[in-house]
Image (tube, rainbow, N blue to C red; front, side):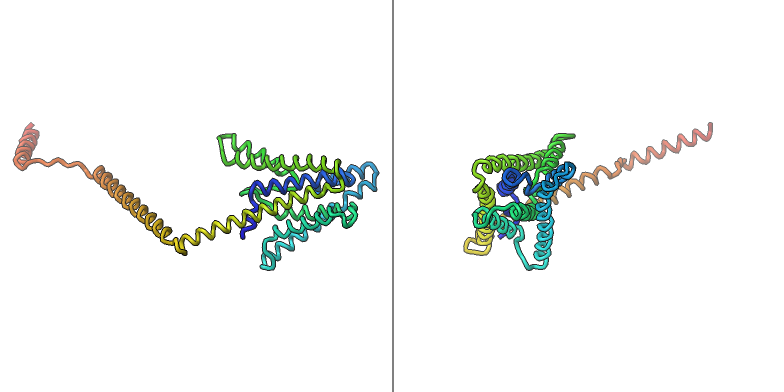
Length: 303
């Protein structure tokens, strides 16, 4: 199944981005104002705490940075394994790892201590954004919104100035939708974490399971569609495919013949235009003209 192609659609991208905003709100509201995904925010808050001499608060922002770096390293190993044929569907594997970790953390089997939960969420969320990178033909990120907003604005202006560009406006709408999904995820995550903090993490798990199910559904539908096409050409209904092929060949032959005829006619017209214009003079008229010319020449000599 083409799991990678099945993940490059708006539904999957929206669910992943909703989970990204949800997790950032969950950790910020419920675990000491620390971001799980947005490293820019963590670095900024780290600097603010250091400038104020709040050393203990500053240290809270270090673990997610460590989880981020480790995730980049693991994603690199996944890429090498995929290149050598040791692992297939690395993005799908990353999504399964994320669902498993968040499900374990939400189950309450182990206390939800920020010491391991925050870097763990940062790790799996970074794997997610490094694994799922495209919406249709657009690159995007599902755990932060700065790049998505910038490209949405750029595509909007390209689509309007200096001339109307429908494709650029379509891309702008997709990226704007993804940016809104991150905002919506943060709103939902903040509300749920304040209302039911003990089970709030299950919300992110449900969003990711929805993305998982959508990828599988689309991949199976694509595989089924390809199988039907193959049966049409090789199976019992192959005759219909053959007739369609003959019909297409006949149409192509007729078009080619018409094109050749048109070319020949055009060449004839050009040849006629280039041919010099000649005037045929009757033999009797030619002799009279010659006599007149001789008379005029002799007259000119006498004068």
